[in-house]
Length: 409
Image (tube, rainbow, N blue to C red; front, side):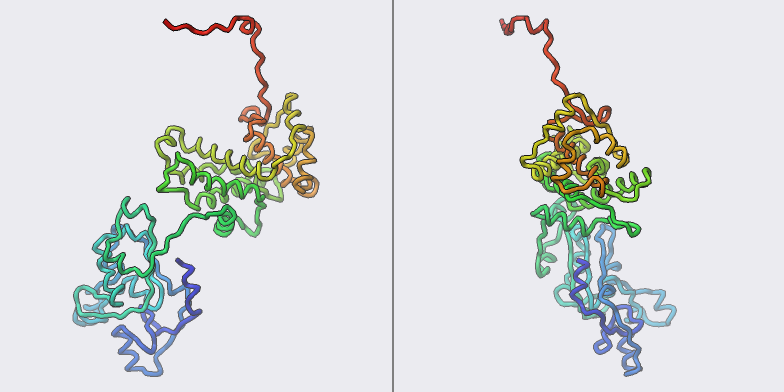
């Protein structure tokens, strides 16, 4: 909604000192009309920028008419010796202060019904009434509201007469395409820090976004609450923070986000999942891990539809294992990957140079190992890292016994 200000003029002239940004040619408040009559062409003028013409209020149950529209200030009346009903005694609320601008209310259903009724006049007639006195302010403004559909019945309700006065109802939706989601996440996430922008590989960004898309399709997650776009945004920021932490610990000059950083960002995921009963049985942490693994598998199969990983799998079949953490340095990681055959071919396929860009090479190989784990071609746990679970040979004693079926009486 704040982007609506881009449709306004860059600057507009206002009467200097006016609380409601009166037009110098058509003032509506009593004090500005008096000043215009007394000072004429000498009336001081100021210019108001477009961003200053946007006023926003979060609807909460404790919001009052005085907050939105205004009230009479008896102290101001007493100090100036005026009658209480004088226009000059008005303490304007947020709505009149948005005159000649945009007034936005967030989470409209949370606004008490009596306050919603108070908006009728401004939306129908364009004026406000304060404390029952015959004070008419013909305001010129645009009113916009926001609300989540489930909030109509969950916490509050938009009363029908007010909804009837709203000119247009615009329904938004989650990104339909993962590329659109990635663009939104890149735009909104805080990744450019202290002038240094960490490198986020395309597959990492795609996996983070796919977690949200898969979550919206998961029956264990409440469809009414859904999975908001804040999930990939927060997950990206947490993953970048973990990558920065690793770079600082290991005194590395370049920061590249790895798959391990996504797992480290699970706290950014669990808090944004409203689970159904089946999901509650598993827990949000387990479901978050499963969503990440499913997203990795999807990205892996997309990038390697027919790639041969037999050399890598064979190395693990011979007892090889790679144990790393989210804090493992690039040099240490490359040292552990050195004995594995087929690594060079994979990097060549991805057009990544281990010599020129070792941090990106490590991130790519970790993606491959995670992909093989997601395809159940490798095993992984915290104690051993990546390894291959060998099939246990059948015990010779039980092998020789006849295969007897259990009989039931």
